Image (cartoon, rainbow, N blue to C red):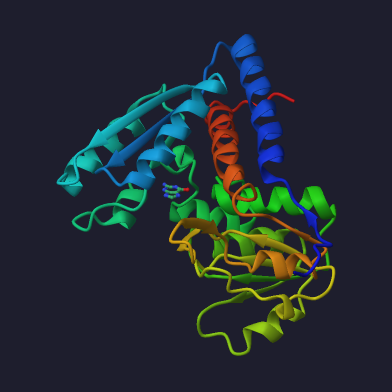
Length: 296
Ligand code: GUN
């Protein structure tokens, strides 16, 4: 067994501090303006993983002092029914954030639903208007997972300017917004994907590696420059030799930890940051919609 030399970036602890900050600012907003931010989560069907996420989001929203609503539709729901729920939430002044839990059943066009959400209530940051705002440097709702990755990076490294970053994965939810955020921090950014030639060589150039591909333990120790910071977005359930299921990331953690300068574990790294950033986005949406600054 190789020895770990990397700093373990504790996303769970950082997320707990961020949620405490959001809770404090939410209380100030209520005290000064009489406003309680509110998040509505829409769940279609009964996907067990989605049920867990939605329950946790509801619990943490209430713990932050915000209003929380859940709207449930059966997995047979039509697109028109879901669009009607979104339209009602758009029109409801008490609702600051709308999150439609993905994945959606096959009969529903997820893009059409995402694009029906008022961009100013789009706390997931998935609407094309928010993607465009982020890409052009305007104030935007930023997708929660890449925002959480950036916060962990800045907390560990401080100024990122001039650093070489490789983002593995080009999804609209993680890879592309992650690249935009790193570019905004003046990194030199490479977006790698399934067609990238010699991915290992690309990664070896990087000061920062963000792995967001959904392939268990794909990033190997000899892909990582000594001292590089490795952020693992992957959440993969794999069956171990003893038949038990284990949660692993996209990074071969034990081996990479012997080479990297710092690394996020799975679980306890990026995962807890996502909900904390969702609450932060909901607070921001509540303030921005009313032309108020977020309390300091
Ligand atoms: N499903 C898994 N993660 C997410 C997320 O961050 N947002 C939404 N809307 N659905 C998800």
